[in-house]
Length: 89
Image (tube, rainbow, N blue to C red; front, top):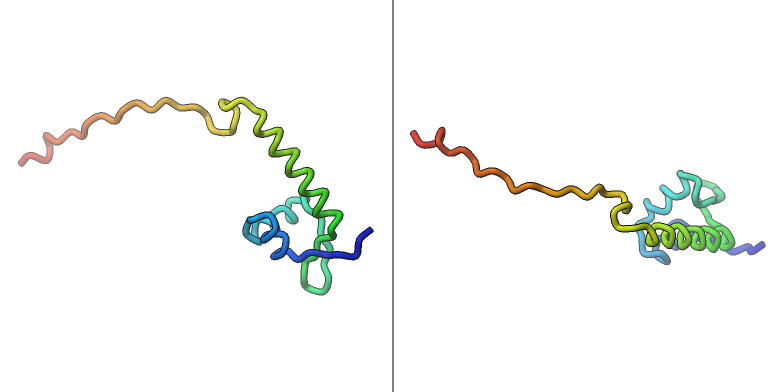
């Protein structure tokens, strides 16, 4: 077990996201942390585990067909022209 701990800001900088994103991962239970005083710290081993899990989850998502990416495919009909007969007074 390593004695090296990262701060939320350090991890956010490493993975190129905002610190709030890291805090959300902690709040959702995907990233474990320890509280030292009033500060959150993440162990190096936990960071490695989280990165591997995140990579695996993103690979699974990338393997899904386009029509299952979370957004429904919607064909939009062109809008009808506005009725301007009321405006001609």
